[in-house]
Length: 208
Image 1 (cartoon, rainbow, N blue to C red):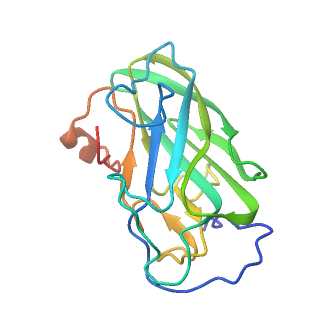
Image 2 (cartoon, rainbow, N blue to C red; image 1 turned 180 degrees about the vertical axis):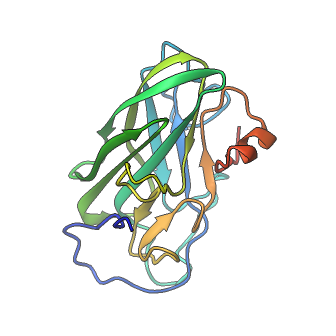
């Protein structure tokens, strides 16, 4: 079984409680800080920015930890990606961390169309929106890029897409996980088709 992302160096007491439900993680291709239909992978694209809002949902509504006590702060993150290459292809070539003071705990690893990476900090940062970093890509045609919730591929050490928090989670203690504890996410689609996305087993975006 894969190890969960560790909150290295964080000594604050961990709480227990029900999972939070309102986080939002998204991709941005054109540099405007949001995810919209303008974000498309083409041959001119070399990076994809990744943002996480720990205490707002995709509609901008503020959310709090469901235990009523602990903050929806952030002390680490892990990310899993997959390329859907029906209309093109993308090589996922690297990850650049954007969180000051964070260190790598799960090295950027590619296995076929999938990739994963994980970083942790020395302390919890306040709830809010953070630019986690950017994914480097080499694009041919017009492919799609998705977040994966969890990955059973033994070649990728990163276990989930999520973030470490003092707000407890459900399946993975203190790791708030996409597809388990929250669902709001926005991916980069060549053309969004709900049936196709469901067939491929991806977490569907909430806004496009």
